[in-house]
Image 1 (cartoon, rainbow over the protein chains, first blue to last red):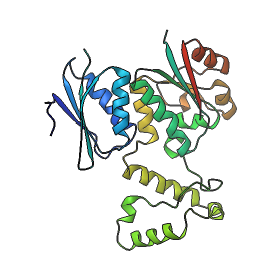
Image 2 (image 1 turned 90 degrees about the vertical axis):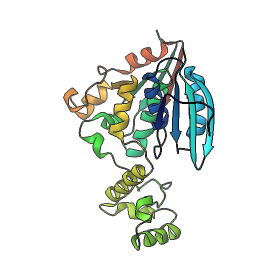
Image 3 (image 1 turned 90 degrees about the horizontal axis):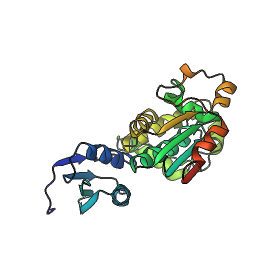
Length: 79
Length: 182
């Protein structure tokens, strides 16, 4: 369980590279600065790709949870 | 002017060679990097209204191709067991099988199914994602004439057709230019 509450959830289960990153980017555009997006992914590549995306774009990756073959990321939109 | 610019040259028109440029360009654009794909020679088929939907993968001359049945087929009773045996016996389809008429279409159908099962985006989907992410899609002027493709044969939303010099200038005027050839 994560310690953060998300303002929006994006489920990319079943999708593969590059779709989780592209959909994350799109979902973040719909949020206000400071709001938190929860991204659920089953793509093992996203374990490295989502942090890379955050590092590059300046959004803050608050927490990563790995449970039952799912990767859950909590991303705070940059202000 | 952009400080970083990623330009990808797409010169191949097979299904397997169409995906990498589109995946890299759409991802780079979503990371905030100005990205462009230059479609030249057979790569033009990737942005051809009709041909983009029927890109194929050739087993002939492609020894790396595995004998891989889509996961959904392998789960089917009987058919799935036969597929499993075939995969175990043949690491890849024997090269000579690639010559059999219909083999290319068959392998293409299997590839498309496998991609769908794995949640991998199709070429038309990736093109849309590229457009949404703001990737510049540039057709090569010379090859359009060479193949007799008119602008209306190609998909909408492209940049004006360009030549080699225009493309090189566009890339190199950035502070950090990057070119990938596919």
